[in-house]
Image (cartoon, rainbow, N blue to C red):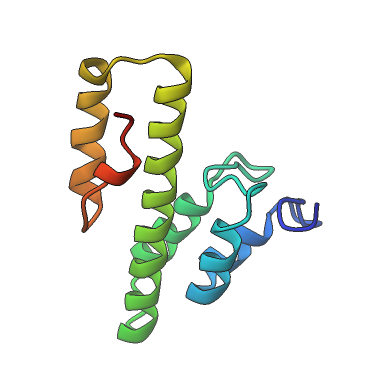
Amino acid sequence: DLVSKHHCVGKTPLHLGSAGAHVEVVAFLLKQPTVDAGAPDSGGRSPLDDVEAMLEQNLGDAGLKDQLQTVRSMLIEADIIEQVKRQAKDGVTREEGQIVRNLCQAQVDRPIDEYWPR
């Protein structure tokens, strides 16, 4: 599966697209069922780790910063959705998951209720 395969330097396409702030590429990849937003590269870093590192470098390019922040939000949202799905599948109660949900909701700019098990 090419969308989740590691590149010769141990990065997935999502790592490369994320670090390059390619919003459309990241959006496409996150829609693929085999792509794991939190998958580590060969060094143990997630795509979100790469984006955070790029933001810390503060390259002085406002457009790049905006794109990186958009990618960051997309990756956080994808991770939140996966956490909620895992909680529902593994039988975690609503009360047990509420702490994680509150933390996650603070990271996303819109409600995640649609993904929360009923």
